[in-house]
Image (tube, rainbow, N blue to C red):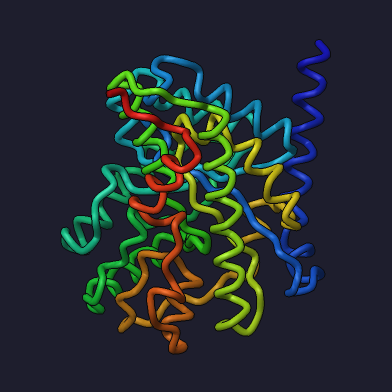
Amino acid sequence: MLRYIWLTVALAWLASAASTAQEAASSVPDTERRIAITIDDAPLGPGAKGNWDRAGALIEGLNAAGVQAIFFVTTDGFEELEDGKARVERYADAGHLIANHTHSHPWLYQVEADDFLSDIDRAEAHLEGLENRRLRFRYPFLDQGRRDSDKRQSVWDGLDARGLGDGYVTVDTYDWHLDRQWRQAVAEDASVDEAALSDVYVAMIVEAAEHAASLAETWLDNQPVHTLLLHENDAAASFLPAAIKGLRGAGWTIVTPDEAYARPLPRPALTTGFTGMGRVAALAWERGARGEGTFDHWSASESGIEERLASEGAVTAVD
């Protein structure tokens, strides 16, 4: 009974926070550093920890931190994983938001616009009826068709016609690569220090957020409410609570996804092919930002993450 009462109170709190997001977005100074947690590719298959309750760990960690996340769902997992749909329903029932990330996760530049929109529609059909839905869409790989402006416009028109808002990213990380390195190490019976792995994960997220905030401060008119890109993997389920603590310790306020998107950043221009690092990077590029020193960061680099894992002793190959 106490567990039921606690969950009811938590869900009421999350609902109240979401309903007041527009007011909060308009009343907080643009200089305050705010960030929302967004999680892609749910539901994913087994990872480094094998057959465990990843959803339960994510829900417990987020609720303990008092954080509402938005899950951008790739619905082929409903067909391929026995617990795929049930897992996403658990996220929704726990008070987290659910949005569209296509059905099969295609690169837009590799498919026709009509086929891409059909894949979005297929996902919408799978998501119909789920609790806490948000009519919002995120591009797989953050790919908006590269330099094909006609294709980009066709997809924009299709999204607008469907009433699907833009689930853009401002803080990009290669958390998927850290998770992959962990999974590979386990498969190869390499040594894994999970405490060190957690430290690298936290540093990756906090430093990526700092990098995006610095880019926005230099190139944009205002500091936006940021959106952090993560994935529904074992790394997030294991280490996200520590990363949230790290962000707060670095002066970040964790806000709801609704607040983050209440005052949306504009779409990049049709002629901007530089979209794969997220919205702040794309807008900075349009304003003249150039060079590796401006954009590159180890948190969105496969080699950078591998070097950090090695230097911290998180993953050690077996001789």
